Length: 320
Image (tube, rainbow, N blue to C red; front, side):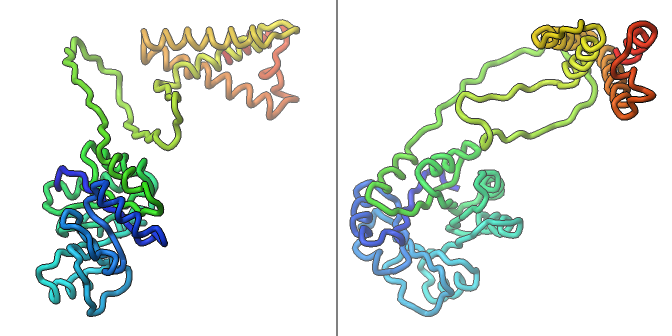
């Protein structure tokens, strides 16, 4: 894969502004113009690659002055290669399922030109194709809906696609596409750290969280162990329900619950497994016994609303 960023402009939807769009593309420095009619490629300067995209099954026809012919089937590619041995060809692959992704990976490894159209709005399938094509000599050109998406495509895996194909509908699209290719993502300086100690905290699970589609600007995510604070909050809620006065206060309840949760979290961080074990057991027992009192209020209602005396002491011992 080449390190250059290719900008291909699709003029098939240009309509009456097609001639003006092509003229602007030439002056903007577009690398290639993509058309469905060989006549639209006539007159382009040598600095612009003429790309003919065939959407229908190929039959013997004049391909005009095209430098590259992109087709959708290997059969059509073989036919063109036999009739025009000196003409460069490429494959157009739509990726909508696992089969399409497999075809795209194979084409990226073997084809001179591969044009990729992803139906998935995320860039995860593109990452897979880029990884599969590592070391290949061909070029990948990915379809982008607009310059903003083109900028993202160029930066996937800090390598990006070799090029982007974007449809032009108005004058100015070519300039915006070229600007997206010249944008830089910046660099992050590495800092050397020293590991001073390690500790065994038990087994865990790995998770991959893709937040790009869910977080907006200035939004973030708090990552940590939920069990420490959760069990503490359960214990705090039950303690407040037992010992609170008749004129309950929402503010006081929140203070008790949060304070108990923070205390349990602190103890869990300090003493780890032992505190987590006991806190989880006590909080879980309180939740289960309170649920039993809710299901059978006649016989076990005291578990949910204990009266003063023996029931209150028993409830506090069992439910935390």
